[in-house]
Image (cartoon, rainbow, N blue to C red):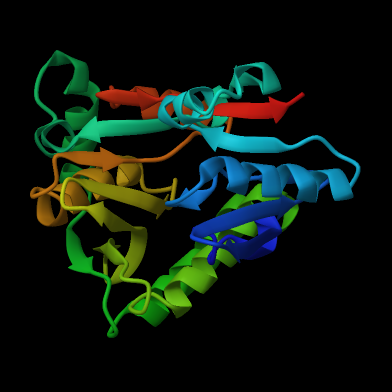
Length: 263
């Protein structure tokens, strides 16, 4: 994630003792929670000092409750305040739910897929060396349909997708696509976090093919993700349409994230 989003996030990294430290330089500097083992207080104080050099208070982004508990366990309770950030909280689903789409709550999803199958003859393929250049061509079509050039968020995502596909095999990505009449109309890709969890980083489909998002989600989960207990579909970034879509799949876990400011 640090690598593929480097141009839009302004991410910089530093190895400090046994920790990886992260700084995101946008309008002001934000930092990630130190990753590693050792003296966590030492690592946090290094970040406090770095922020102070910029004339700012330390702001840590995207912490879960376990990370906040670690800060409290270090006796820093009176040193920081934290605030929930729903925009970057993550939607995590039971893989069986996304594969089987059973029950009344998934009735509309099954309908979308049935309508698609009645209207189109389609093929599923894994993303591979044979078709990866076609995936890039598809993304150009997607950007034209969605005016990526006029939307900073979509433009940044397109750059991240280009980097991801250029380094697809080196980064260990797994992905799939849907074809209709030989042309790609949807794609998805992500990576294994551990033996229990797969994270979906990207999912794109042409809206002109009604039900294409529902289909690629289900086909990819059925074919590639059945061995995982959970599928993490990441955050909604406060985009209302995306929030509605992610909620409509009924996450098993809504992993709340917090932003921390040191006083």
